[in-house]
Length: 248
Ligand code: PGA
Image (cartoon, rainbow, N blue to C red):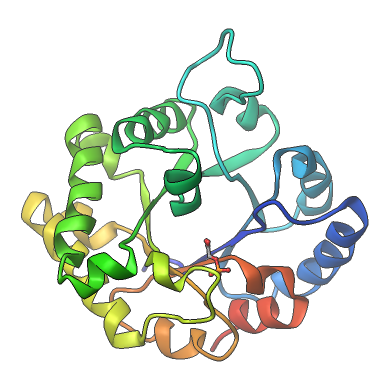
């Protein structure tokens, strides 16, 4: 059976002092959590987080990666570098990166390729805006984002990708998708994958993200096709994050 996967996306938050407090608390409950836990801090804190989690069951992840192997890309970080810093996961195509840094499906597919080629697990983030939802375009938007990457990298590589469905209107807004809304999209993703390859569909880890908190997480995780969470704001709060990670 797939293990529940919970990824903390700290975004551009934290400091040496606040990270240290959070990590001390997370380490305490991580052994009782029946989940795979991943922490994605900003690049400068990768080493700090590594020092805390080494020897524990917590894994390290990055929030972004460059699409090239190496070279003159000032300010960028490659997948091989992240691997050297103990990363196992990389978030790719987060909606904030798509919107604020104009990341296209084509760029995202390249980043996923680099991530997989470095031996790391990409977490492909997909999701619709509120306007797209209100127009009835959820299926088209989600399948566009998904199929673009699959067509570029092929199913053999795609089976190594974790999918995170994050409706943009739910991210950081406190307005989470209802369990039914989330399940409907997760099911649709799984059915689409089933049409391509039943095994890939069955084994795919499809996370939900968007204002997950200690109150809504228990109902969301009961949905058949929700395999875990990508958690932003609530992952910065010890009590909330502990509650999410230790759901029964
Ligand atoms: P949120 O962020 O939990 O604060 O909504 C989720 C995300 O952006 O990954």
